[in-house]
Length: 301
Image (cartoon, rainbow, N blue to C red; front, side, top):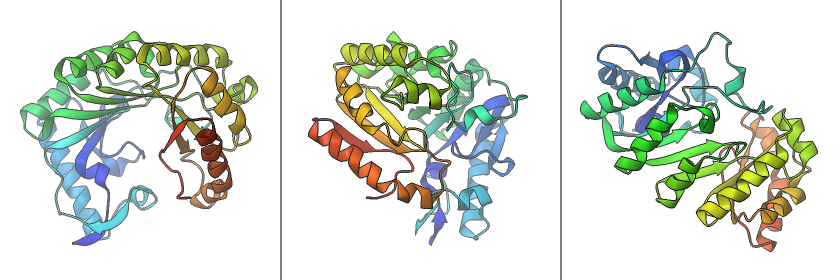
Protein backbone atom coordinates (compact mmCIF):
# COMPACT_ATOMS: atom_id res chain seq x y z
CA UNK A 1 0.00 0.00 0.00
CA UNK A 2 1.01 3.60 -0.47
CA UNK A 3 1.46 5.65 2.70
CA UNK A 4 4.11 7.52 4.65
CA UNK A 5 6.70 5.49 6.49
CA UNK A 6 10.45 5.23 7.06
CA UNK A 7 13.08 2.96 5.55
CA UNK A 8 15.44 3.30 8.53
CA UNK A 9 12.80 2.01 10.94
CA UNK A 10 11.97 -0.89 8.64
CA UNK A 11 15.60 -1.92 8.22
CA UNK A 12 16.92 -1.57 11.75
CA UNK A 13 16.81 -0.14 15.25
CA UNK A 14 18.85 1.97 17.67
CA UNK A 15 20.71 1.38 20.92
CA UNK A 16 20.34 4.48 23.06
CA UNK A 17 21.53 5.64 26.46
CA UNK A 18 20.34 4.36 29.85
CA UNK A 19 19.68 0.88 28.46
CA UNK A 20 16.98 1.96 26.01
CA UNK A 21 16.51 0.28 22.64
CA UNK A 22 14.54 2.55 20.33
CA UNK A 23 13.13 2.58 16.83
CA UNK A 24 15.08 5.54 15.52
CA UNK A 25 18.37 7.39 15.86
CA UNK A 26 17.06 10.78 14.71
CA UNK A 27 14.52 11.46 17.46
CA UNK A 28 14.09 10.87 21.18
CA UNK A 29 10.54 10.05 22.24
CA UNK A 30 8.88 7.58 24.57
CA UNK A 31 6.69 6.60 21.63
CA UNK A 32 9.76 5.30 19.80
CA UNK A 33 11.12 3.19 22.67
CA UNK A 34 10.95 -0.53 21.90
CA UNK A 35 12.49 -2.22 24.92
CA UNK A 36 15.23 -2.15 27.52
CA UNK A 37 18.51 -3.87 26.80
CA UNK A 38 18.16 -6.22 29.79
CA UNK A 39 14.60 -7.30 28.92
CA UNK A 40 13.86 -10.97 28.57
CA UNK A 41 12.95 -11.87 24.98
CA UNK A 42 14.63 -8.70 23.71
CA UNK A 43 14.65 -9.71 20.00
CA UNK A 44 10.91 -10.45 20.07
CA UNK A 45 10.19 -7.09 21.73
CA UNK A 46 12.24 -5.21 19.14
CA UNK A 47 10.44 -6.93 16.29
CA UNK A 48 7.02 -6.40 17.87
CA UNK A 49 7.75 -2.73 18.56
CA UNK A 50 8.86 -1.97 15.01
CA UNK A 51 5.87 -3.88 13.59
CA UNK A 52 3.47 -1.86 15.74
CA UNK A 53 5.12 1.40 14.72
CA UNK A 54 4.79 0.48 11.04
CA UNK A 55 1.10 -0.26 11.66
CA UNK A 56 0.73 3.24 13.11
CA UNK A 57 2.34 4.66 9.99
CA UNK A 58 -0.07 2.70 7.78
CA UNK A 59 -3.13 3.94 9.69
CA UNK A 60 -2.03 7.59 9.62
CA UNK A 61 -1.32 7.54 13.36
CA UNK A 62 2.45 8.12 13.24
CA UNK A 63 4.12 9.80 16.23
CA UNK A 64 4.68 13.52 15.82
CA UNK A 65 8.45 13.01 15.72
CA UNK A 66 8.03 10.74 12.69
CA UNK A 67 5.80 13.21 10.89
CA UNK A 68 8.41 15.96 11.31
CA UNK A 69 11.29 13.85 9.99
CA UNK A 70 12.69 14.13 6.47
CA UNK A 71 13.01 10.33 6.33
CA UNK A 72 9.23 9.94 6.72
CA UNK A 73 8.16 9.73 3.07
CA UNK A 74 5.24 8.49 1.00
CA UNK A 75 5.94 5.35 -0.99
CA UNK A 76 4.71 1.83 -1.69
CA UNK A 77 5.41 0.01 1.58
CA UNK A 78 5.07 -3.53 2.83
CA UNK A 79 3.23 -3.85 6.13
CA UNK A 80 6.15 -5.40 7.99
CA UNK A 81 9.82 -4.76 8.77
CA UNK A 82 12.42 -5.80 6.20
CA UNK A 83 13.77 -8.87 7.98
CA UNK A 84 16.37 -9.71 8.92
CA UNK A 85 17.22 -6.22 10.18
CA UNK A 86 20.35 -5.06 8.36
CA UNK A 87 21.07 -1.72 10.06
CA UNK A 88 21.91 -1.12 13.73
CA UNK A 89 22.64 2.35 15.13
CA UNK A 90 24.84 2.79 18.18
CA UNK A 91 23.93 6.00 20.01
CA UNK A 92 24.18 4.45 23.46
CA UNK A 93 26.93 6.67 24.90
CA UNK A 94 27.49 10.43 25.17
CA UNK A 95 31.06 10.91 26.42
CA UNK A 96 32.69 13.52 24.19
CA UNK A 97 35.62 15.92 24.22
CA UNK A 98 33.75 18.71 22.42
CA UNK A 99 30.60 20.79 22.94
CA UNK A 100 29.26 21.29 19.42
CA UNK A 101 26.41 23.78 19.29
CA UNK A 102 24.44 21.70 16.76
CA UNK A 103 24.74 18.40 18.65
CA UNK A 104 21.41 17.13 19.92
CA UNK A 105 22.99 14.23 21.81
CA UNK A 106 24.67 16.49 24.38
CA UNK A 107 21.32 18.14 25.16
CA UNK A 108 19.98 15.04 26.93
CA UNK A 109 18.89 14.74 30.51
CA UNK A 110 21.88 14.68 32.89
CA UNK A 111 20.36 11.60 34.50
CA UNK A 112 21.04 9.62 31.32
CA UNK A 113 24.03 7.31 31.44
CA UNK A 114 25.98 5.33 28.87
CA UNK A 115 24.66 1.85 28.15
CA UNK A 116 27.27 -0.82 28.79
CA UNK A 117 29.12 -1.62 25.55
CA UNK A 118 29.36 -5.31 26.41
CA UNK A 119 25.60 -5.46 26.91
CA UNK A 120 25.11 -3.89 23.48
CA UNK A 121 27.35 -6.46 21.81
CA UNK A 122 25.53 -9.27 23.64
CA UNK A 123 22.18 -7.86 22.52
CA UNK A 124 23.34 -7.74 18.90
CA UNK A 125 24.37 -11.38 19.18
CA UNK A 126 20.99 -12.29 20.71
CA UNK A 127 19.22 -10.68 17.76
CA UNK A 128 21.40 -12.64 15.37
CA UNK A 129 20.71 -15.87 17.22
CA UNK A 130 16.97 -15.13 17.02
CA UNK A 131 17.30 -14.59 13.24
CA UNK A 132 15.75 -11.11 13.35
CA UNK A 133 19.11 -9.49 12.60
CA UNK A 134 21.58 -10.12 9.79
CA UNK A 135 24.77 -11.98 10.67
CA UNK A 136 26.60 -9.15 8.85
CA UNK A 137 24.85 -6.00 10.05
CA UNK A 138 25.70 -2.45 9.02
CA UNK A 139 26.56 -0.44 12.13
CA UNK A 140 26.13 3.34 12.26
CA UNK A 141 28.10 4.75 15.20
CA UNK A 142 27.34 8.19 16.60
CA UNK A 143 26.19 9.49 19.97
CA UNK A 144 29.35 10.66 21.73
CA UNK A 145 32.93 10.49 20.47
CA UNK A 146 33.70 6.85 19.63
CA UNK A 147 37.48 7.20 19.94
CA UNK A 148 37.03 7.87 23.69
CA UNK A 149 34.77 4.89 24.46
CA UNK A 150 37.09 2.04 25.43
CA UNK A 151 34.46 -0.68 25.59
CA UNK A 152 33.29 0.28 22.11
CA UNK A 153 36.58 -1.08 20.79
CA UNK A 154 35.32 -4.62 21.41
CA UNK A 155 32.45 -3.99 19.00
CA UNK A 156 34.83 -2.57 16.40
CA UNK A 157 37.16 -5.57 16.80
CA UNK A 158 34.19 -7.93 16.37
CA UNK A 159 33.25 -6.02 13.22
CA UNK A 160 36.76 -6.44 11.84
CA UNK A 161 36.84 -10.14 12.70
CA UNK A 162 33.42 -10.90 11.18
CA UNK A 163 33.47 -8.47 8.23
CA UNK A 164 30.73 -6.14 9.44
CA UNK A 165 30.44 -2.79 7.68
CA UNK A 166 30.65 0.19 10.06
CA UNK A 167 30.02 3.91 9.60
CA UNK A 168 31.94 5.85 12.26
CA UNK A 169 31.20 9.50 12.98
CA UNK A 170 34.22 11.00 14.77
CA UNK A 171 35.22 14.60 15.47
CA UNK A 172 38.86 13.69 14.82
CA UNK A 173 40.18 15.27 18.02
CA UNK A 174 41.75 11.92 18.93
CA UNK A 175 43.50 9.57 16.51
CA UNK A 176 42.47 5.90 16.56
CA UNK A 177 44.73 3.37 14.80
CA UNK A 178 41.80 0.92 14.96
CA UNK A 179 39.65 3.24 12.84
CA UNK A 180 42.40 3.50 10.24
CA UNK A 181 42.79 -0.29 10.24
CA UNK A 182 39.08 -0.72 9.56
CA UNK A 183 39.16 1.79 6.70
CA UNK A 184 42.12 0.01 5.11
CA UNK A 185 40.30 -3.32 5.47
CA UNK A 186 37.47 -1.89 3.39
CA UNK A 187 35.00 -2.34 6.27
CA UNK A 188 34.87 1.04 8.03
CA UNK A 189 33.68 4.32 6.57
CA UNK A 190 35.23 7.06 8.69
CA UNK A 191 33.53 10.46 8.71
CA UNK A 192 35.67 13.13 10.39
CA UNK A 193 33.80 16.32 11.29
CA UNK A 194 35.96 19.42 11.86
CA UNK A 195 33.12 21.67 10.64
CA UNK A 196 35.46 24.64 10.24
CA UNK A 197 38.45 25.81 8.25
CA UNK A 198 39.68 28.41 10.74
CA UNK A 199 40.48 28.23 14.45
CA UNK A 200 38.13 31.08 15.38
CA UNK A 201 35.09 29.47 13.77
CA UNK A 202 36.05 26.03 15.09
CA UNK A 203 36.12 27.19 18.70
CA UNK A 204 32.85 29.10 18.27
CA UNK A 205 30.88 26.06 17.09
CA UNK A 206 32.84 23.27 18.81
CA UNK A 207 33.18 24.95 22.20
CA UNK A 208 36.82 23.86 22.61
CA UNK A 209 40.08 25.04 21.01
CA UNK A 210 41.07 21.76 19.33
CA UNK A 211 41.39 23.14 15.80
CA UNK A 212 45.09 22.38 15.31
CA UNK A 213 44.90 19.00 17.08
CA UNK A 214 41.92 17.94 15.00
CA UNK A 215 43.36 18.93 11.66
CA UNK A 216 46.72 17.32 12.45
CA UNK A 217 44.83 14.11 13.24
CA UNK A 218 42.90 14.42 9.99
CA UNK A 219 46.25 14.64 8.23
CA UNK A 220 47.36 11.46 10.06
CA UNK A 221 44.20 9.67 8.98
CA UNK A 222 44.74 10.73 5.37
CA UNK A 223 48.30 9.42 5.45
CA UNK A 224 47.32 6.20 7.22
CA UNK A 225 44.42 5.41 4.85
CA UNK A 226 45.72 6.76 1.53
CA UNK A 227 43.08 9.51 1.88
CA UNK A 228 40.19 7.03 2.02
CA UNK A 229 38.88 8.61 5.24
CA UNK A 230 36.22 11.27 4.61
CA UNK A 231 35.86 14.78 6.00
CA UNK A 232 32.34 16.00 6.69
CA UNK A 233 31.30 19.60 7.13
CA UNK A 234 27.94 20.32 8.76
CA UNK A 235 26.81 23.70 7.47
CA UNK A 236 25.14 25.85 10.11
CA UNK A 237 24.70 29.49 11.09
CA UNK A 238 28.11 29.66 12.76
CA UNK A 239 30.26 28.43 9.85
CA UNK A 240 28.37 29.47 6.73
CA UNK A 241 30.97 32.17 5.95
CA UNK A 242 33.94 29.81 6.48
CA UNK A 243 33.53 27.85 3.24
CA UNK A 244 36.68 29.09 1.44
CA UNK A 245 38.81 28.17 4.45
CA UNK A 246 37.13 24.74 4.72
CA UNK A 247 38.21 23.92 1.18
CA UNK A 248 41.77 25.22 1.53
CA UNK A 249 42.38 23.61 4.92
CA UNK A 250 41.11 20.29 3.58
CA UNK A 251 43.65 20.48 0.75
CA UNK A 252 46.43 21.44 3.15
CA UNK A 253 45.93 18.23 5.13
CA UNK A 254 45.64 15.88 2.17
CA UNK A 255 41.87 15.39 2.09
CA UNK A 256 40.42 14.04 -1.17
CA UNK A 257 36.76 13.38 -0.43
CA UNK A 258 34.24 15.58 1.38
CA UNK A 259 30.72 15.04 2.66
CA UNK A 260 28.48 18.08 3.02
CA UNK A 261 25.59 18.00 5.51
CA UNK A 262 23.43 20.53 7.32
CA UNK A 263 22.44 21.27 10.88
CA UNK A 264 19.36 19.12 11.57
CA UNK A 265 18.04 21.81 13.94
CA UNK A 266 17.47 24.27 11.09
CA UNK A 267 13.97 24.52 9.71
CA UNK A 268 13.39 23.22 6.16
CA UNK A 269 12.79 26.81 5.06
CA UNK A 270 16.10 28.00 6.55
CA UNK A 271 17.93 25.07 4.95
CA UNK A 272 16.64 26.14 1.54
CA UNK A 273 18.10 29.60 2.19
CA UNK A 274 21.51 27.93 2.39
CA UNK A 275 21.30 26.71 -1.22
CA UNK A 276 23.59 29.49 -2.61
CA UNK A 277 26.20 28.57 0.02
CA UNK A 278 25.88 24.86 -0.81
CA UNK A 279 26.44 25.66 -4.49
CA UNK A 280 29.43 27.83 -3.61
CA UNK A 281 30.92 24.99 -1.56
CA UNK A 282 30.49 22.47 -4.37
CA UNK A 283 31.90 24.79 -7.05
CA UNK A 284 34.93 25.70 -4.95
CA UNK A 285 35.59 22.04 -4.11
CA UNK A 286 35.30 20.93 -7.74
CA UNK A 287 37.71 23.63 -8.89
CA UNK A 288 40.27 22.37 -6.37
CA UNK A 289 39.83 18.70 -7.31
CA UNK A 290 37.83 17.64 -4.25
CA UNK A 291 34.81 15.34 -4.54
CA UNK A 292 31.67 16.22 -2.58
CA UNK A 293 29.00 13.73 -1.51
CA UNK A 294 25.64 15.06 -0.21
CA UNK A 295 24.93 14.19 3.41
CA UNK A 296 21.94 14.36 5.73
CA UNK A 297 19.46 17.25 5.74
CA UNK A 298 20.93 18.86 2.64
CA UNK A 299 18.27 20.44 0.39
CA UNK A 300 18.25 19.57 -3.29
CA UNK A 301 20.07 22.15 -5.40
